[in-house]
Length: 141
Image (cartoon, rainbow, N blue to C red):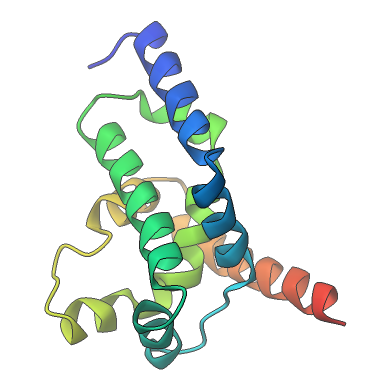
């Protein structure tokens, strides 16, 4: 288990990684990405934005792994971050299909475990998904 100081230091390092130019572009792309099906995700993974999709999802799964394994205090992490919830909210309806389709049973399992430990996780994910869709619709009009 990490100390509060170590957790804070790692959270700040994760924040610095999010500011890197390519990661920032990937995060911007993912913000506009609203999959409605496994096909939408397959298109993203196999298309021109494959690196962006993989960068964002694997980043948050890695960060969740640090939390799940005691490298970062869970409460401190969830108090300081919300983007991981938004990322998972977008893909959560399709995670089981993704795991089966690509034969990847561990796909986003760290992120899923972290999020599902949070109070009212399923309800929060559904509400967040709707809020994100509404924000995207407003930007598009």
